[in-house]
Length: 343
Image (cartoon, rainbow, N blue to C red):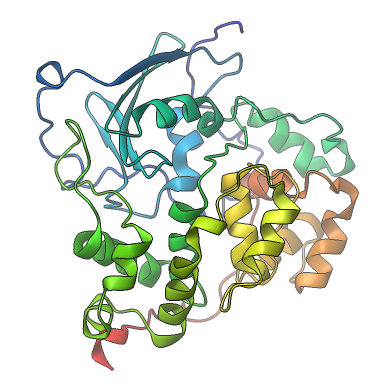
């Protein structure tokens, strides 16, 4: 593939007000970006190079896997962006460093080879927009031109994204991210290699099942999400993508108690980089789509009707609207996060 310089696409002056993103960019938290052990003293177990043939924005490419400020699995340090992950071979720590239009990949741990080989998928190398017709709406066409960096990445691991998706069910983003950090501190594994201080690997299904009720309460997790998380941990090995396509994995996920349409969609958007699956049931998404495309609030059925002209690429349109769409004016207080630790 040809090489182009890394760049950050800017929103044009004519673009509408950007709504609050559903997923924040890579964490720059003080704790996560703490001192890094000397990399030279710990040679990586895997080294590779990715040469994107589009104007890659590394932080934006990795943002779907970020869970807010201080996410222990993803952070930006002076020497690159670091991410921890589980793999079929064990845990891994990956450092991604952009240099002159290339991405230098280094990985440590028993899963280093698998994780390093998955990096092109994280960045969206396999994403194809064949058949996408942005000209069906002037805003979508304008955002498509303004966001040449947009690629839908895939990670190939259900467990890591499923844990986070369950924690985000029917709560505010602030609350979900707080519980995510608490769970990683409580049960997450120390990352292999010279990872920045404070990073953790998503706990294994066995570690999740070993968490006691009083520990869950201290993390702030309510009973419904607790039961759903224990249910998916009990069958986690059967939920990895393997040869499953996106619809097949969604059907599998929805057979697990506590996993519905929204959670299954959130998972396949990341495991497969699915360009079409929309998170039906999301509290804010329907209003983002309705206000951006039609200037009105709508419900889930109305959202899907507005997105119908782009069937096959509806999630791609959603990602563009998250970049430069608009939300209805706020006329009341924001929903307050619920702290279940006080119950």
